[in-house]
Length: 242
Image (cartoon, rainbow, N blue to C red; front, side, top):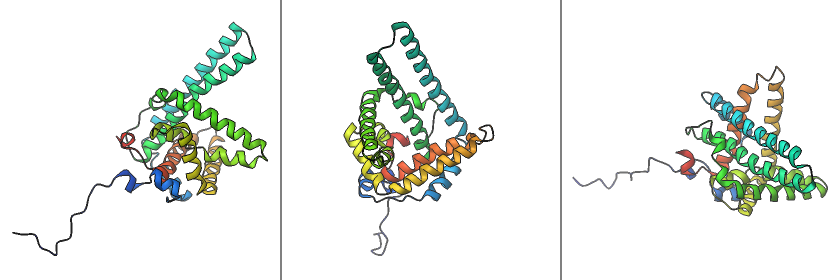
């Protein structure tokens, strides 16, 4: 029996992550939704079942970072202090800290799309150390220059570069492309992004007052909220969702 000419064409059931969320192209064009209340509401809902994993991830990252600092301090006492050694120490600490921070961010990003998360996630991005280190150095220089130029440019860049590291790691972008993609996309909703970051800071500050017990909930929520914001702007790669 031949199909009826009145039959509606079959539609694709499975949507790509680009259709479900954002994409780099949409982010650069400012074509994305950014509702602070919706981001916080979704993030709060997704903390259930993820808090322990995220907190262990934070503990692992903290232990590795503190361990690296302890080694550097020990080396300073053993080899003697000097300006050159101080600069080298700071570079090495940044080289360790930046991949850890990106890994913590990826915990929230993966949870934002309900992908499986692992507490070892902060350790998974050391293969990106060189580009992430270069990115961190360039961003720091630009932000410092911005603060010297009437302060406001530095504040602007401090927030505009927030997603440069994840773009480098998750979308395999180069240093300059990561910085500029983050800056251009966030600029479209800079004040909304600033409001989200400020509100999350206030929430975590209040949560830390009663012996820090509230951070059990608010730290994972913060991580997931940042992942949601990134997801809505730039979408999520298939390997991140796997």
